[in-house]
Image 1: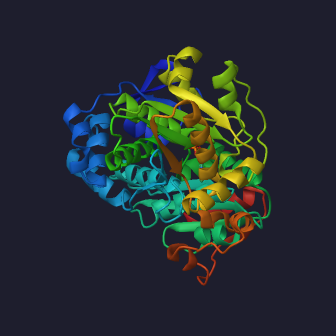
Image 2 (image 1 turned 135 degrees about the vertical axis):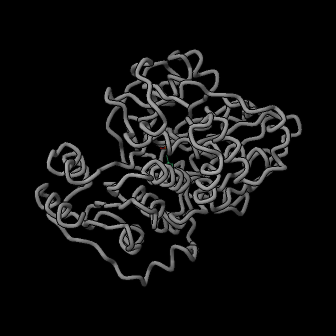
Length: 433
Ligand SMILES: *Cc1c(COP(=O)(O)O)cnc(C)c1O
């Protein structure tokens, strides 16, 4: 497998370089040079494969031998460690639950696979790899647990003091081992600036091997394809077209679905569901892409005003609006509608859906009004207990916190409290690594 930059098809790199660097120097995004098709018999016989076997077959075909099969198998075994069940709401709508991982959101799939790939590519290096992550709360937890106890890799997470939820902070600060947390007296932007400056600092980079766990790393996209196949396996379409509805922010999840389709999964259509941050639905409707600042919503993991994977979506459609809008519909819903969606799903189907999933549900419902004979799957991207206050407010009832999260409550927090000066951070890094 080779990858090119979306800004320059002649800039071609190996998988190792794409994974370890994250971003091409021209600020494009890495894309596979070729997307091979899976054998038709594999698609037909999906039900005979376990989730891990599906992940293995899909990645083996896409990576085309750049990782030996026995190593790839190990990587899958260590990263695909929890299920992705499809739960039917009614005859035509189902929910694909992607929240059964340690941080209760689908980002666990990407983070775990990326951690394993980085550790694999780092083998044989004498110096350990130090991964810097700035987080506003959510991604940090998935990355921290993804890299937990990964040999040869240390992780430093910077988060803004007092600006992440109690449980999010516990996810970042209670792991120990190779994971360190820094509580920055500042904002998320301060944390991000400190990380950015670290990559530019000559002295740091000559002493420590630094890397990032960037959200647009191709290694996070690849495993997000696996669960589209896994979902398909669990459906009985009975001749109906299968439609995936993806609650979206940076559009990584939806892009992974597009690539799964290119590899041969017979998905008939995609629905891009967003909250008030509707840059992509607007593009699909009008053909004009106008990125802007994000606005805050109750589905806050989708509060993105300039979706980073848009470049990949366009690339997959030969950069033409006409192609893209044939394959993807876009629908947006505000917070009021989202709250109603949460309530409606609970009242009608006795299912507790989180605000992100509710945006997806509303989009699927609207789509099916004009496309009635379809089988729709909404990606439920997070567990409802991650948004406890809003959920309990909407449903006026208690939401259960899963054990794996509740067990963190009593664990002691360990974090280095730090001002937002780059030099303090730099000295800390030089002292500790
Ligand atoms: C990150 C996230 C999203 C958005 O996913 P993208 O791949 O960025 O579109 C949706 N829901 C939840 C809960 C998330 O954490």
